[in-house]
Amino acid sequence: MTSQGTISKKQDTKTANEEVVTIRDLKISFGEQQVLNDFNMELHNGENLAILGKSGSGKSVLIKCMVRLLKADAGMIHILGKDVNALKSRELDELRQKIGFLFQSGALYDSMTVRQNIEFPLRRVKKGIKDKDINDKVMEVLENVGLTEAIDKMPSELSGGMRKRISLARTIAVDPSIMLYDEPTTGLDPVTSKEISLLINDIQEKYKTSSIIITHDMECVRYTANRIIMLKDGAVFMNGPLEQFEQSDDPVIKSFFDSARQTIK
Amino acid sequence: MKATANHISKVKHYAAQRSIRVTEKTLESVGRLKTAMTDIANFFLFVSATFKAMFSRDFEFREFMRQCYVIGNRTLPLISVTGIIMGLVLTIQSRPVLIKFGAVSMLPSMVAISLIREMGPMVTSLICAGKIGSGIGAELGSMKVTEQIDAMEVSSTHPMRFLVVTRVLACIFMIPLLILYADALGIFGSWVGVNIKGDVNIVLFFSQAFSSVEFIDFIPAFIKSFFFGAVIGFVGSYKGYNAGKGTESVGRAANSSVVIASLILIIVDMVAVQITDMIPS
Ligand SMILES: Nc1ncnc2c1ncn2[C@@H]1O[C@H](COP(=O)(O)OP(=O)(O)OP(=O)(O)O)[C@@H](O)[C@H]1O
Ligand SMILES: [Mg+2]
Image (cartoon, rainbow over all chains, first blue to last red; front, side, top):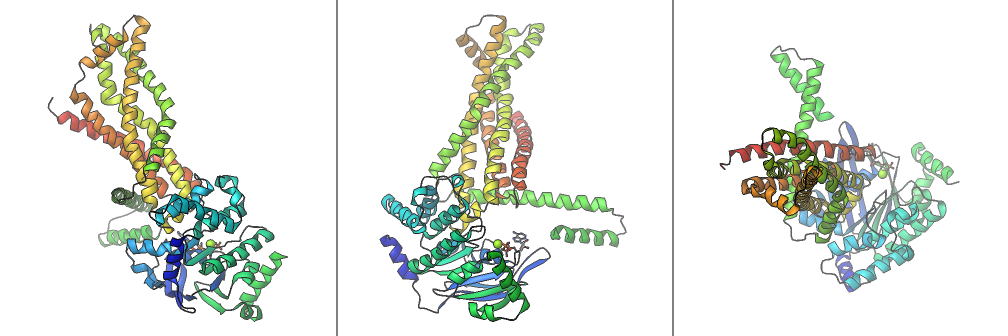
């Protein structure tokens, strides 16, 4: 790791259990459709939080609100002590640099090679970084995701799983302290899914990040999550550790877990 | 659309108060007019945001150069061919008329003036609207749809600066150059046209052509070509950057970039001609 990386990490260090993300009474709607309605949650430092919910329940919308890609209609979002909705553009930039966002689709830049993809945010976010440091960092993150051989490939030459991993590498290259994963394992085979789940754990350990993991994949939840939030009708339906979900008699949760179990088999 | 529905109910209320009869069709066109007005307002907001991003310290010079290269590379063959043919056809068409009026010696300068003042800028920029404008619309549109622009946004790498400013400036810079190039080739094409019937020295032809071209012919046309470049760059970027969701919106962005840019080009040209006409020569 570069010296610069270590310094920025130290500044972000928080005591365990401190809330890095706090969301209160969040509301957002599109036209007539109320997607989130009085949603509340918090993320503690160093925690891996999984968010479950049916397709279209507003999981992606939720994390997009957190980085202000979408603006909430009402409610409060505090991240690392900053009120996201009140930030000026300069401060928003600073906050966004501390948040790693893994898109559901990967969102690799088509016109750039893998190396250029990873260099792109590095060069622009860490002003004045030396070429050698950039190169070291690119190699480091590619090693972390196990894809050093793909460095000069174009995104179109990569498989779905490789794209996800490169996208992950690009995200962790700027040393974020909070990671938002949008369905990191969806659409991948069980083996690759497991690799990515383990990778998420590795990243958390190595870079001391706090993470929110949106997923339908129960295996991924089992590997990574310390706590789970179930999203239904725009609000938190259940919040607790995995055991609490597995022992629940609630038909909604039961059906979710049962169908997920079936799809795995 | 919720906003439009809201608006329609307002219009209905207003009409009912004054007992004016309003058909559904009228309401629909009012709604459409409102969408169009919103679109125009958003376009001007986009233009002002681009200017703001343009004057930030970090200029993406490499991407700007790459875009200039892309523009030249994509359009040069097409513009070469149309440029020559433009001059050739103009010459062959107007020669019999000029002979009738006994003014065939005016041919080179007439061709040069009409190429420089009008045909060169207009034809070149319409070609560029088709080739460059649609390219920008499609490229940015697909980046939008696949969340690449969002990904730049959340990593605070300023997509307006990297994607839009560079493309708009490349258009403003390159399209005037391409227009000058097309003008020159057009005059060359005219020489070819004259040479079919007789034998004229090329140097002599060019000096004849430029003998009666004055600043008043050249400068307004040159200035307007920068605006043409800006129109193509801004419309393509705006349409791509604001593409909706789903792959079909990429096609729509590319298509409407061309249509709208061509329309605005013609309007800008008309305004430019009016302004030029007011300058005393
Ligand atoms: N930009 C938008 N404009 C209008 N509606 C939107 C927009 N983004 C999301 N929605 C709507 O919000 C709802 C929630 O979408 P979201 O993408 O958050 O679902 P999700 O929970 O992530 O589902 P999935 O698991 O399929 O990704 C959907 O019904 C969608 O139609
Ligand atoms: Mg989603």
